[in-house]
View: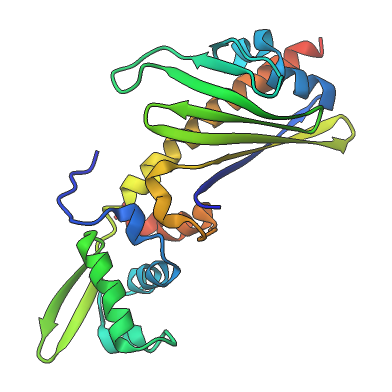
Length: 109
Length: 132
């Protein structure tokens, strides 16, 4: 599994639609300054900043200062934790359902 | 509703046979695992898989809904996870049956309550990012 030194659960971080939208926006560019991100939302700069902080605490977003502006960058690695975990159950059923298909096929004969 | 695992499978069979496959312990043993399932609301059962290093292999369940032959629901608990599995069977005609599976209640995601979301689609968007 992924080493997780971050202070916030990645599942909590992606629970909010604004934060998922932020992740989506950040996945489309190498990095984006705050004003470019805030322009995509009806909420104010402070509210968007708070969401970015949550993402940062979950290790999903990295930031750096460039002159007077802060630029944000997506770090997608923690998302694997969620994906792997859903995929586990998905695989469990898909494998079983293949066997069910065989069983139903045999019953026809 | 929170994180939902939602899968559809189509089979060439009758809805009665599909129902039997989901509810008859002998048939369940052939495609899921050893079990003591009964399609009776309130019945507690186990699916007993081969244990591995992460898991004792046991799923503890209780039958919640039995609406023969279209709907079956049971709780599904393994390790720390407490889920609900719901099957919806639909006769598609021409000897085809659709089995719809929904597994809900993933405990890691209490924070997701109220955030119904298409997870598959969402992760689809990130596949490239995640590959990187």
